[in-house]
Length: 430
Image 1 (cartoon, rainbow, N blue to C red):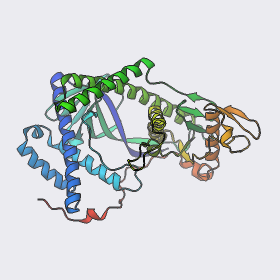
Image 2 (cartoon, helix red, strand yellow):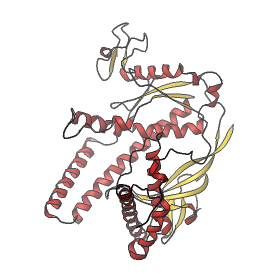
Image 3 (tube, rainbow, N blue to C red):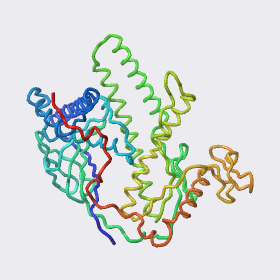
Image 4 (cartoon, one colour):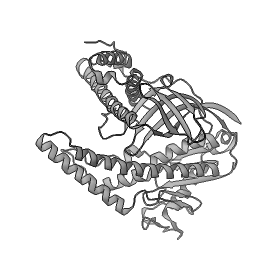
């Protein structure tokens, strides 16, 4: 057994009073304004002077804003500084060539409200078997449902509202004991992610779940159409957003939050079960961000098959491919499971029995029939077998390297990242 400290998240349902919820909502909008303003400030500094503002300089501007604007001063200073650090980290992720993040973008008004707090600004304790409490600056004590142990020291917290309920998420350092070998060391499974069937395994199992009923989809489409008409009317009249439009947006947010919760529940269940049962899990190394990119193109070079591509994008995002990949990696740290990514090319066209590769082998979405040997199987299961075989042939699953499966990385300072030349320039305030 091998124990290390790792970063982990803990999320709980929060139950603020009506007054506390009203103040947290106000702070959430202030945090969004602060993030967007700081982003515009950085963009302006780069366009005008080719300099990059750092978080220290922007914290000084925040102090000036708190002196001039009462509604900014109402936000705890620590929370405002955390927002600026989030923006700074977003830029660092963008500059890191090994990180998939793109350029930071503005936060929409309709996005989830969130208020960050550093660990030293809050206190957390357990009240009884079912309830815990957190003390927040200027808000006081707020109860939350103690649905799982914290497991470690609290480093930070984020209070958020998803349109249905309030939540508090804690970042904690926990001690993880990873086994030297998995409980079932010789088990390897391949997993194929699909749009009709969410997960197909090489042993023939297929897991799928629908997160919205046809009636719920119709209701959501109706609400979005209504919101679009309201936005068009508002822009034509140059009017402010009406209370009725806000209520429609709130209904949309509630419906989408319920769908997200169902998707997260399925993904976590699948990841936990696979990692508990298998020492090695092979998945396709997919670039999900590129796969779900829009096909609209530009005015000069318009895209093709835009509607079909948009439908595929929605299907991929609905099945939670990326969320499953993250959940799998997190759970593998606990069980000692090895996650292997293999090239995705031709896994759906190759026969898992004879190796013949031909696009005509796949007769339909669900049927695979090899034109060479006549082997017939479910197309997704056949692809999962190919994914598993590719992992078994990889050198990291043989010999001594197999004993290092799933070992979590200890907490270390972030590695030195490659910076743009602009980062070396001085910061001037005008």
